[in-house]
Amino acid sequence: MAQKVILVADDDASIRSLLKQLLADEGFAVVEASTGVEVVEKVKESSPDLVIMDVRMPELDGIEALSRVKATNPKTAVLIMTAFGSSNAAIRAMELGAFDYITKPFELDKISHTVKRVFDYQDLTAEVEVLRDEISTLVQTERIVGNSPAMQEVYKTIGKVAKADATVLITGESGTGKELVAEALHFNSNRRSGPLVKVSCAALPETLLEAELFGHEKGSFTGAMTQRRGRFEMADKGTIFLDEIGEMTVATQTKLLRVLQERKLERIGSNLPIKVDIRIVCATNKDLQKSVEQQKFRDDLYYRLNVINIHMPPLRDRKEDIPSLVEHFLAKHRYSATAQPAAISEEAIRRLIEYNWPGNVRELENVVERAVVLSRGQIITSRELPFGEHEAGEGEEGDGGDEVKGDSSFFKKSVAQFEKDLIMKALRDANGNRSKAAEMLGIYRRLLYAKIKEYGLEGYPPKGR
Ligand SMILES: Nc1ncnc2c1ncn2[C@@H]1O[C@H](COP(=O)(O)OP(=O)(O)OP(=O)(O)O)[C@@H](O)[C@H]1O
Ligand SMILES: [Mg+2]
Picture 1 (cartoon, rainbow, N blue to C red):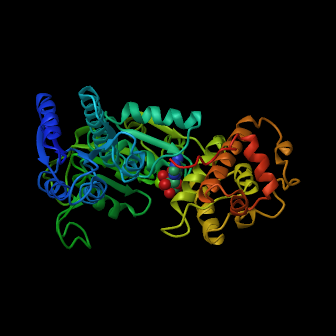
Picture 2: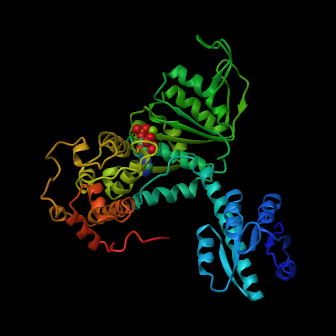
Picture 3: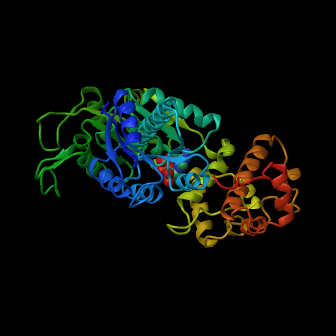
């Protein structure tokens, strides 16, 4: 690790040399300054990792120097030395972002200990930043939301197979997140720095799809004006995602089978074999096994594609994921780029949970997005939802919990968690002003008071930091 640089600043030369000796003995490089102006200059010059300075210095005092240092080098840690009992200066220093303060006279042990604490802290935050970078390249895609047992299984399988090159078949109804899973597989694989190429097999007629996948030589068929690389070639060292594989014709299936077996292909109109290093992920909302029985899908291809199957559960079977999905989409589709994520009423969330979601997560996302627009950034109520007026239990106000029938423990828990989060958010946004929070939530103040008590939020949000 690079040697850490510490700037020691005090107008008292004996203190400077005392500190310099101590810190040099511990292996640090030490720079000195005797005035506030000098501190500011030397920080710019040698960007030290740490500044230890006295509050009282000529020209520019330590507090002023601190605020200038923080303005130019926000990552430089600053320790302030104050005379015993001058708590005002200490408080001011902390407010301006000093790491800590040390009262004079000090013990040398105390200095060493504090310096160590500063560097431990810096190393830790640096690590967190590296991690954050890695994660953001890893998951460049939208986050997959949902913690239901069924989704946990999906995550586990992704984790187990992402790094392998095995072919994966993702099945599930429309709008369940199959494409998100394909992205997660790619970005968590060793191929993540390579391309992820997506092809929808339903979008193109047979000839064009083949030309798209395999590429072609000039003049190989009507319309092939130039030579072109196919998607398989483009996906070299990466992943190819064949979406809606169930729509592929048998002729194209046969060609795909050969790519799978030999990892080689020829462009249309050429017989020069081209090697490709690709990982194949496909998806379908069809029952491929049935297609195989009806001889619409080659069984040998089916077995090769279905080495690993990830099945996406429909949303109606994992309703406990609805509150977190709603929250996710509220943040994603906030009313304007600068607006807060919208809030949603208790009745509206209840309706969303009761609905059956034939269009799965995509439908939920569309409903939430539409409601955000209709509510113009205010609270979303059931009026902004596209469900008929009296379809889903419009019970008496206030004590909605009682009207829920059947096995509703997850339901109640989900609603409660969501309600609590909403209340906390409103209280934060209203700076603890309960009348304002109630207004933001669109509920009576009395109800808010009751809920605050129910969830133990009396002291929320905590004052100060
Ligand atoms: N678990 C999830 N968390 C967050 N967003 C999701 C989730 N599942 C789906 N979505 C969102 O819902 C929409 C539909 O998802 P996706 O396109 O992956 O579905 P699909 O299964 O490929 O559907 P189709 O079969 O119709 O192509 C996308 O906008 C996606 O971001
Ligand atoms: Mg899709």
